[in-house]
Each structure stands twice: as structure tokens, then as C-alpha cells.
Image 1 (cartoon, one colour):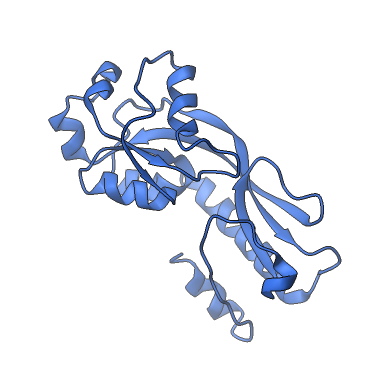
Image 2: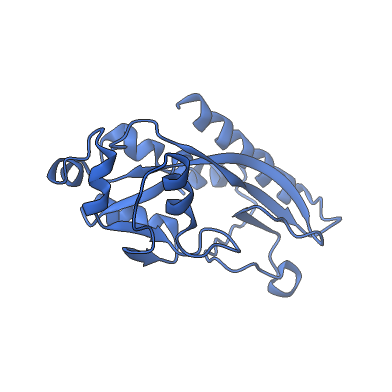
Length: 196
């Protein structure tokens, strides 16, 4: 979100309206030029542009990691509050991220317990506020990890997601303002990849 200022400086004649939510949007009915999704099944009726892949990993505040002796001790997760993005993608059961991570690393966790949120950023904010351990999307939490607001207590124990970020537009809409935003957004992704 902070980078949007760069877009408005570079393209002052393009007006932006940002809407957030988890539901798929009817672009034509809503009068929306494009949507950004994290999912595994782009709609066949829309044009979609790949944006980036993603990995997930457990994140929490440094204080929470210390209080629960989490540093490199995965077994202690059993005594923690798991923070869930209950709508991570369209067919998510509400605990799929934690379940797939635990299964990948053969960790026996009560993945159905914890606190659920309807957006991943809210789970991450709860983690920053010492409420529990969130399943962070690596690309979205990398700056908070670098600043020390969050820690990945088990190092780089990531799982590659089957889902990815993509941009959807209505077929045939290759308007200059849409192309400018897609190009700019891809530049932002490339720049963020350089700092990983």
C-alpha cells in the first residue's frame, strides 16, 4: 500500500479507488477495471495476468516467540494460539494454510483451534500484537521480518503455495491506464524480490 504514492506521482491523471475484500467481484457490474487475487483458480471468463508466487511460514512477535520458547523448537507450537486467515483463497476450509504447513513438516498440531480472521493482514497484525502465531505470506511479511516487528521462529521453514497472485481484467480491456497499473505493479514486485 505505501508504494501507491509512487504510482500517483508517476501517473497523476489516473484516478485510483482501492476496495478490499475476499469475494470474487463481477468487474463489469461493479465498474472495476481490475482485481488482484490470491487463488489457484482464475476465472475462465476473465483475462488474468500472473503476478507472483507465494510461500507461507509461521510468524509472530519477538516477545511471543520468547515467551513460548519457539526459537527453533517447533514442538512448542502445540501450546500457542494459531492465528488463521479463514478466507485465504476461494475453497479454503479456514485452516488450510496451517494444515498444509504442519503436514509438510510432519508436525502434529491442533490446526483447527485458534483465532480466525477474514484477511491475512489481520492475522499478521494480531501476531505483531503478541496474540499468537500467524501463517505469514512471505512476500507480504518480508519488510516486517526485516524490521524486527515479526520473527520467523523456525527460520526458513516455508511451504510453497499452490495459489499465486494474479491480476484479472475483463477480456479485451487493454486500456492504457490498466496497462500502466499492471506494468507498475509488476515493477514493484520485481523491486521487492531484490530485497529478499
